[in-house]
Image (cartoon, rainbow, N blue to C red; front, side, top):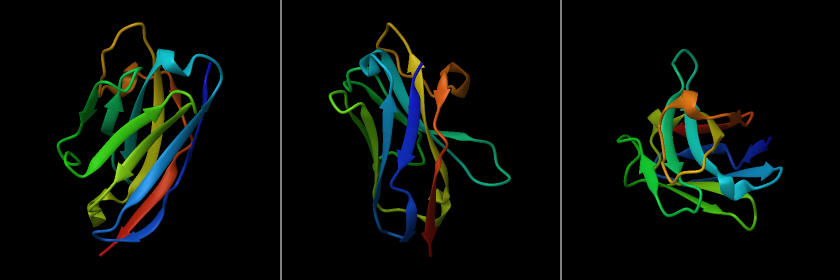
Length: 126
C-alpha cells in the first residue's frame, strides 16, 4: 500500500509556472509507475502525464506536451509535475496516482492505477 499527498497547487496568471509534488509513503516506491490526472468540475477526470518506475520513460497528453514535465526522485519517494506556460484551461484539481507494476510500461488509463492522492487545486487566471 502507498499513500500519496500532493502539494504545490495555487493561483497563477496565464503564462506562469507551477511545480506540483506528490510525496509517497510506504515501501518500494520504485516499484510503482506514477501518473498525474486532473479534473475540472463538471468534467471527467483526464490523463495528464505518466512516468515509469525508473523515470526513464514518460508519456504526456497532447494538451500539455511541450509545456509540462513529469519527473521523479526515487530516493525522496516523490514525483513532480513542472507546469510551464499555463493556460486558463489548465485549471483543475490535479491528482497523482500510483500503479504497482513489474514492467516498464506507462499508461494513461485511469483504471490501471491503484492508489490516488487527495488532489491539489490549480487555478490559472486569464
